[in-house]
Image 1: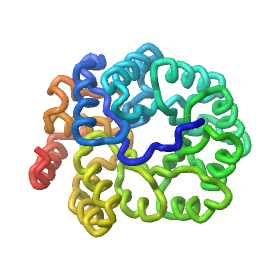
Image 2: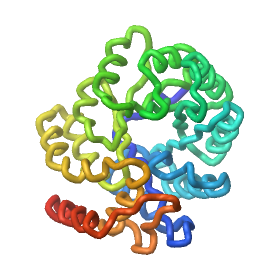
Image 3: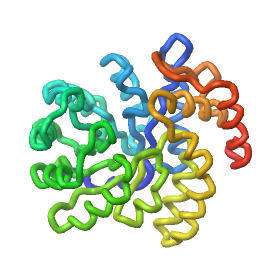
Length: 298
């Protein structure tokens, strides 16, 4: 029976990297432990982890390290998307062998493909794996509500979706209103910027970045206990840093890792990004410092 129990806060891990572009595994373990100490329900290894910049050997090493460190205490979701069904199936089976509890897959996007072919792509993968799959809806590779509903109808493993094509709120509403057609389980993404609004519309979890598991867990706890006003107040309070973190993938990894260094999770030598990549200038870093200090995150 496919696991449909996942809900809550599932941050996407940052990959600690030294100046030479090598993964710093000790800081990766430290990050996982920090997540668990702050009460997250799962973690993901995905686009914000820069998984697209890593070889298959590197991907395996990152996933194995996370699985071993978590040791069954939280769920681990691995991004295994690729530009062909065969390669995605290969990545997916390998991830399961290494202990992933679920997969996250975005549509193939290098060449524009009709929606029905994308649905067949997801179904083909689902038929070859034994764990649940999060459909990853992104602005550059969208999974429309109608596609998600059809996927869920076609295979039981296609039972989750991470919605992050902006604006996310109408997509959440459309999926919720179509519950009679499908029982797909909805998570939010996009850095958690609208998580409370998404929770109100049927989202059962959020997949933000790695920098504030403590904050996201408090928001989740407040909302889950029925204190929606407190959850909204917390989200509003941290809007200044959420806005800073909501950069494009060309810049966001540097900012995430900078914040992780400032919060004492990463060593200062682990805050690098594999190129090519934009990098914040000194003024940008000073602005981030001020926001972190004002919110008492450092």
